[in-house]
Length: 79
Image 1 (cartoon, one colour):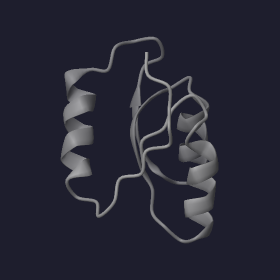
Image 2: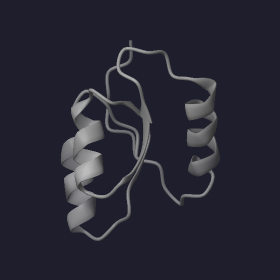
Image 3: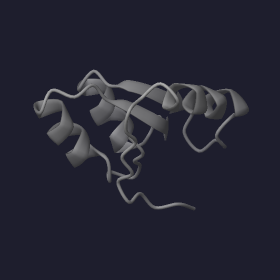
Image 4: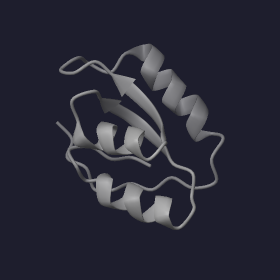
């Protein structure tokens, strides 16, 4: 699930209620989606607040994305 800036939280909740396991893309630790994902038991790839996404986090997200049947993009803002 690709989210950020709160765009993923409603989808995380919905998918969780439907019984789906959730794995996020890279989320900064000050993002509400990070905290909602953690609270729901999602597999969250975290990055320090206000830092660029590290190669390590990016590579982890790419590797894990190859192990899931679906990727949902929540319309998160980029920039």
